[in-house]
Structures are given as structure tokens and as C-alpha cells.
Image (cartoon, rainbow, N blue to C red; front, side):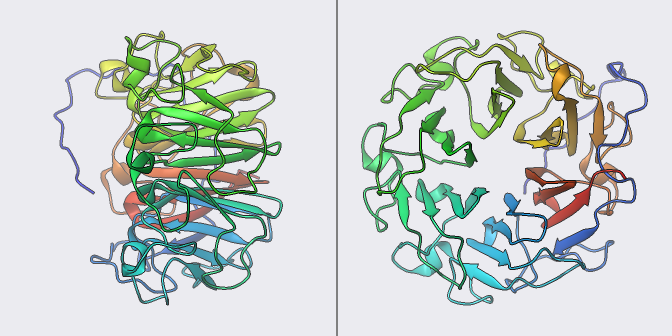
Length: 396
């Protein structure tokens, strides 16, 4: 990951909140998976093995007991733990995308197929259904039964006409059945949502597709299925998006992490028409603003800097505020325009930023957290910049 070094201004914005209540247990992650065996070390380069990770961008628990799925994005594979790991460095049981745990390479250095991957990022699991955003193959893979053996082939592919095709938008114009750099995938109430990032839109399938190439039923962020302009080709407002990465559904609301505009878009009612405008945004003071941290170097409890993922954690909305290397959370009842977050993880205060708080990685620090999910009291965090996944519980 390339880091940009910025000179901080002399004055910080004042935080909207005082001392931040801890979102997660103060002692840090219960379990750490990945390449860091000694918390003072970051292994580089990272060789693939059953216990190493390279820039993981998504992870999800099917239930409290497992299985656990992790998109090991840099190694172009999906790792599976049959049961939820209970100790640091637990090796994975299964993999999809490579012939063995020691191999790597895009599409396993062979012809793409139903069990190959090229920078997998988003992941969603609901009941027996698993969906993976295979971003650089411009497709979503769906298993109708959770994989039980390594390299179990997917049942359905979306965005392409078959498992061997991998061109963005099928090599032509955008359409209801194409994808382009799709980074996020969500299953909620039997509905499939895909953050079609490169096409600057979010797509909805009213039910889990059973046939490859099924077209989407609804599009948000663009006026129709063939347009792919940033912010719908207009000035930034309540309709368009720039680099949407994640979708969440809670209490009848739809939320989209609009990372390129440094905001989270919120629809207070589930949209039913193409290009429906959102009701409010988090991270910006109004619909027309786009600057990270509202134009300041330091964040506050109400600002965001490239939020890549959102998830419900019991009665709270958690946001991976990725470029601020933190996770912030709101009580669901408190959501409103430019609302201040109430809870924090990864930093000491809302006005702090910095990868690992400008120190070596710790059990309670973060470096570019890319993907978050929750199962009961446990958050699963793809701590991408630290090449690890954290299982971190809510406070007792």
C-alpha cells in the first residue's frame, strides 16, 4: 500500500463529542488471523500459507460458531475456517482460488473458471448462500450451498455470460447484466445488492439469482442501466455516487458507503425506482460536499475519509472509516444529516488519525480497515493495511 504523507495544519477541528465510548472491547481483538505473529513485526513479503493474509478486504462469519470466510485479496483466494478460530494464527481449513495453500496468482495463473479469483473483495453469507465480489474479474460468484471442500465451484456468475469471461462490462457498454470493478456484495432479506464500483452505481436483484448472467432489477446512482458517469454526470447531490464500496440494510433503511465522496448515503425508506435520491448523508454537512474530513486534516466524530464498509452491529451502525484508520458507530436511532458518531475503535479520540496510531500494530489498533461485518457480539474486521483479520468483541 502506498502511503501519502501530509503536513497537518496547526489547528485541529474540535471534536463533536467528548471522550468516545468504546465500540469494541478495550483489550483489543480476541483473535488475530494473518501474518503478524509478533505484534512488533510486519512480515514482508508475505508468502501464501494456510495462516497468512495479504491485504484482506472482506470477511464474514456465517454464525457465531462459523464457518468464517476471508477474502485474501492479495493472494487471489478465499480462505475458509470451518469453525470460528479461537486462537491467534489459526490456519484455514479450505481455500478457493488456488490449487494449494502455497500458490498464488490471478485466476491461479490459468484460464478463469468457477473456482478462480482475481482480487476478491466483498463477501456476504446468508443461510446457505455465499456471494463473493470477484472485483478484478468484474463478476460476482454465488454458491447456493456453503462450500464444504477446497475449490468447490460456484453455482452462478453475475456480470459475465459464463465463468470463463472476465471483461469489464462484458467488453462493451454498461447494462443491467454487466459489472465493472464490483467491490461490495450484500444479502439482506433474500435480496442481493452489489456495489458496482467502477460503474459508479449500486445494483439490486430482488431475489438470489439461480441462473448465470441474470440482469439486475434496480439501479441506484445512475439514471439508467447504461450510464456510468461519476455522480450521475451531475454536480454531487443526493443521487449520484463516486466509488460506492459497500451496502447495508437496517430497519427498513438502505445505506451505501460512497467512498469517493467521503460519505455514507442513507435512504430512510427502501428505494423502489431507479436513481432514487437518498434522504441524508453521514460524513458531509450537505449533499453537495465531498471533501474528506470536510476539508480538514484531522477528523471529528461527524467526518469521514474514504469509508469503504458499513455493517450493523446489534443496534448500531458501524462504519469503516478507512483512511482515518478507525471504525466509528452510530446508534441507529440517532441517524441524521451530518450526525456525529457516538462510538469509536482504533483511535484514542475522535480527533485522532494515523495508521496504528502512528505506532507498531497492536491488538486494538487499525491500519486501513477495509471490510467489516458482525455476528452477534463479534465484529469481523479485514484490517487490510496490517495484513490481518480481527475477531473483536463488543464490550461486556
